[in-house]
Length: 238
Image (cartoon, rainbow, N blue to C red):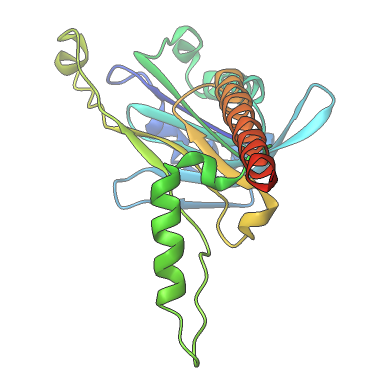
């Protein structure tokens, strides 16, 4: 599981001007063992490949980036691990700038992704007629020289953003569309029923969404198989 948290602050709150100094970057590398740092084109300063201890285990910090108004954290763990990472980073930043201890972000967004084996076939994600139509076309596109097969599918929903107040705009915060993804994992046989899932949610909400989807689609798949078996038995009767 991977969780990304993005916090946006008012201007002049994040001690960005100290983070990018040799003192600031060395202090963060010392605290979290980051293996590399680099600049992005938008002047975002990035730390990669660090770790933190959380609930008795080591959690990788794959990404921590700093901008003049934004702090982004990405961990191979759940939302609790990401919050722990942010709290630890806050302590280091407070050493550089004591006023940061009381800093409150204007927005906090979370994104969770994970791969898991789920109890339904990929075909349950689509209308059966569409699956049948595509499967037929795949066969028709095969030849004596080249055999074709269905290797993967993509299912992505785009969630638009509707501002309900002017506060964010007045504070210079831009919101972007987000995605909700459930699809067979790339480069994995469809028969393995391993899915990549992504949502703009905390890890607990994400796992609940995936669990509810699995229960719904697995139930429909079992019901469909049961109806097909019943129909087949009726057809065999004299």
